[in-house]
Image 1 (cartoon, helix red, strand yellow):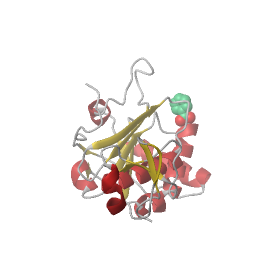
Image 2 (image 1 turned 30 degrees about the vertical axis):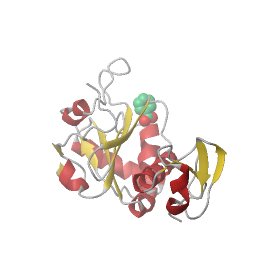
Image 3 (image 1 turned 180 degrees about the vertical axis):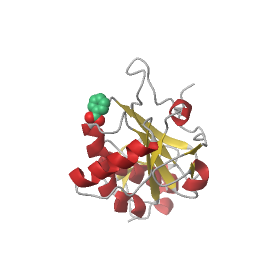
Image 4 (image 1 turned 135 degrees about the vertical axis):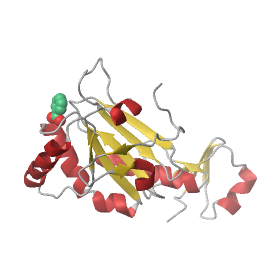
Length: 211
Ligand code: BEZ
């Protein structure tokens, strides 16, 4: 059965470009992003991994470890990394799992046979420090992912993990957030001392609480 939000991210041991990874141990107390790409030496994947490398400081700021995966073998990953570094003007600074036996891909349902029998689709799993899956996204091979959107989602997840708020459509860091419906009106002033406005009884906005 497909993994769902709130499930424990399955643990595994795998070979990567940065050595053996025992996934849960490697995550430690960090947040994690595990993302698959269809194949090495392909154009869209090359841009995705270069983009991820450039965003590493942003992931680190948020205490997020990133790991990529495809079903290509380790020597192929190592050769491809040279191309990514050359063409994307960066240095790949995160591990890429070599899942040649498809163990991890199958564990995470990353191969969708009606899309491709042989390659992983573009899956993303965001995993919290409790090892639970907080977000899943699946893109087709032909569409490169928006890694700024992943940072935005992480910001939302980390905010909502710590405060009784949710984030509205297209929310960006620094903008107003929504007070959780479970919070009673009378409890708002103590919980949200920066103030709030009630647009409707069920739509109450407050400045982002952790700024
Ligand atoms: C790519 O990464 O460019 C790609 C991979 C598989 C199919 C189509 C595009």
